[in-house]
Structure formats: C-alpha cells, structure tokens
Image (cartoon, rainbow, N blue to C red; front, side, top):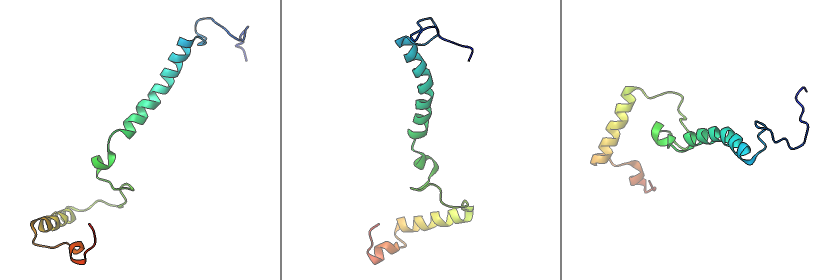
Length: 93
C-alpha cells in the first residue's frame, strides 16, 4: 500500500471527507442505480408486451391463422351469435 494518510481525518481537497464531498460521492454512485430501477419499474410491461401474471409462458408465437381464428371467435362472442361456455355452466367470468 503506497498511499498513506498522515492523519485520521484528512481535510485536503479530493479526500471526500467534507459533508458536501460525501454527498456528491454518494449522489453520483446511487443516482444511476435509482434511474435504472425507475426505468424497469415505472412502465407497465404487462400491458406493453401483452404478458400475463407470470410473463409470456408460451414457447412459441401464434401463427397468423391462429390469431385470426381467435379474433373471429371473440367477434362471434361479442355479437352474441355464440354464447360463451362460462355463461352456460354458470361459472363467474
């Protein structure tokens, strides 16, 4: 160890022992972590990426035919031409 301090409380500039120096040091070291956490937490990733409670659990994406089939089924349910099974058996939605 080649760098030695002659006293326990050095007060030279650059030692970061003043309250302002310590505040600046911690601000510059903690601020990037807070910014990164805010970027990860603030946006609603479930809504943005259309995932469920446990993320995207499917191993593959739907084909265009499967997507169209699901849209057609939802449209039939909304127009009333097909009654959803949950309404027939009486289970809550």
